[in-house]
Amino acid sequence: ALRELRYAFKTFHPFRHYRKVSIFGSARIYEGDPAFEMAREFARRIREKGFMVITGAGEGIMKAGHLGAGPEYSLGVNIRLPFEQVANEVIQSDPKLVTFKYFFTRKLVFVKEADAFAMFPGGLGTHDEAYEVLTLLQTGKSDPMPIVFIDVPGGDYWKRWRDFVEECLVKRGLISPEDAHLFRITDRVEEAVEEISGFYRNYHSSRYVDGILVVRLQRPPGPETLRKLNQEFQDLLTGGSITASGPLPAEANEPEIAQLPRLVLNFNRQNFGRLRQLIDALNRY
Image (cartoon, rainbow, N blue to C red):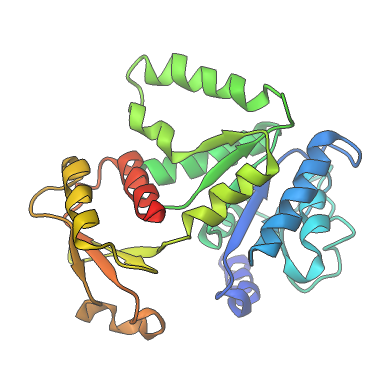
């Protein structure tokens, strides 16, 4: 397992400065199917926004993602199975393909290396990955990032899943209503691309420094905007206010982003759906 991870990290390292989207979906959806063509078009458009694409390297939606992005912008994380999971022809001989023995190491790389997630219709594996990512976002074990569920036009695959979430999880108090802000559902490629690229329109990244959340931005909010943010998102704070800042001393190990403006806040580390709403608000300014 450790050898797999070392090799994977070595493979991904040259592409660390590219943002990446992990694409999930069924291996049993074939070329010509509307979902296949949507995945191909989504990958093509997200590549045009400067993103690379990571897939499970198999057939179906995974192959569509590689076809759309093209070999140069594709990375693959395959899994050895007794059936079904042979690497697709686009990525098969590519040095950016990593083949795993263990699901847990493969899933770690899928999440660690991604800046966004695109979920197309799929089976148990797709749902496994979706719940894994949502759990990491909900609990703050992953950095904030967009996850979009994409269906064919007029399709109800993810709408039915959302109905289950609302009826069986939210209404029974098993998750918070704000958790629904962690994801988006759409049946339009352009909306899915905007959901991901728009997430990084102003928001750049975040980290904790001595328990304080530091949010890095492309553009700082003005005084009036900052006042409004403090009014709207006071519930996220354990004390103090959302304030503008330069880089903190503990961030000296990231000199490449030292010039970015910051917001700092005493975040309660509970309401990550609301934190996503704060990021959305920052991206609107």
